Length: 226
Image (cartoon, rainbow, N blue to C red):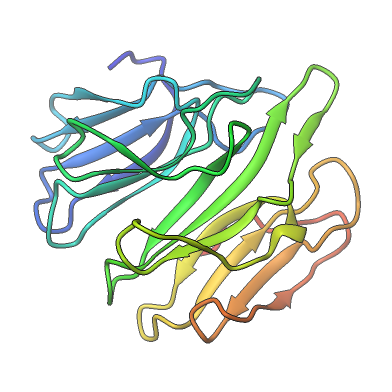
């Protein structure tokens, strides 16, 4: 792995902590953008690394590993920040990164910026999808497809749970005591006021959402931890 690569995501296999996955690139687009070159895996706690693909993913914002299977891993790929490309969305590998399936693809301009796995049910995952493109004069942010998506069968099928008005879904966190309680950080429009910014909460697994924190019209929430 090149030392100049910016690491955007790190995930450690719970069942085998020697296994570490990283994804490169900066998924939180601002004036300066670092384009990644894919994902890497280490089987010796970071001493050595092997390239495991997704070279055109642009930026990998987050990765999630199955708690009982170190070879089952998901990657949230935002895609090329400067234009349209096909290698974006949620990717899943069942063989430790030797091959990848694009299990959630919306279009060539909307990618995945975050993904979280339900610790009580690893077949359930939430993904934040974001339409983002860096232009020299502006940032295109948000679309009808943006929002939060959920799968309950390990990525085979996904449903849109809404929040598209927030434009930019950031971090997602599941309450370890009650997996029906999920928090979503919504940053909203990056360069203008308005939009449904703030922190959102659901107590029914994503069927209904309530904004529980709204700071101001020009301040959003990017991270949330439980």
